[in-house]
Image (cartoon, rainbow, N blue to C red; front, top):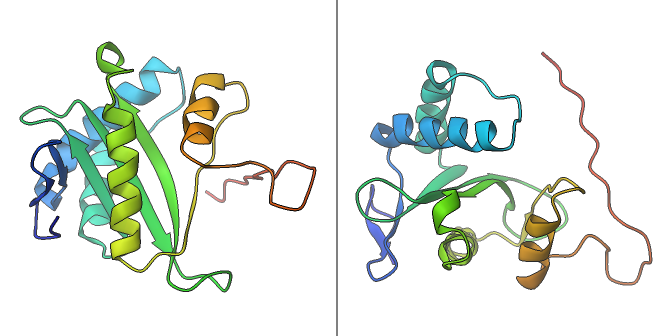
Length: 164
């Protein structure tokens, strides 16, 4: 496992960290993800420079799965927090092309994302999942994520307000 620009994290698994020159690929995958789930998304032209900045920022990273044309990707941002040592990570996106779902790519991406967060000293990871997305909820729960804090009997909720 390395963190050099675009260096392999797991040569056997075909997972690598993106470099700024991968911004167009990340933008394409983000648009495909949004189109599949009929979610609003900025255009490729808007996303590409955003991904270029995000990938260059030490407080974020993008992972790609697959050699050549990526078969999936994960986007993680990190921020300081008082709730744990090191940064709090947010898994902003995890996407695997539809034809390859169920083959372990998502699990491998998630495991590598967690490992990279730990390598960067992170203490916690958050994921926002739509309540109706039962498959995604089962996936994350299978990997140890919860929507009920230990010691409580009520769900955690995420509130959003766009500021643009």
